[in-house]
Image (tube, helix red, strand yellow):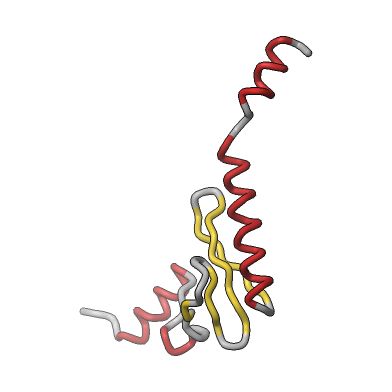
Length: 94
């Protein structure tokens, strides 16, 4: 009483939003910078935001690398919290 493979594929696609491998865009190829990949003629910066992996594309390697560094810096700033100096100034009331 099993379902046909085509039916299972459609149900999976609807439930997860994933497309079959034949429809997926070009694979990511490694570059010399961690977190920056090449996909076709464009570059992709892979970073984490809020515990989830995100991807953003750019026209050139330099743009993608700059994007990756900026997003990583933003994440570190959010995660870091207040600095001790700022905390002391607020506590003292200055």
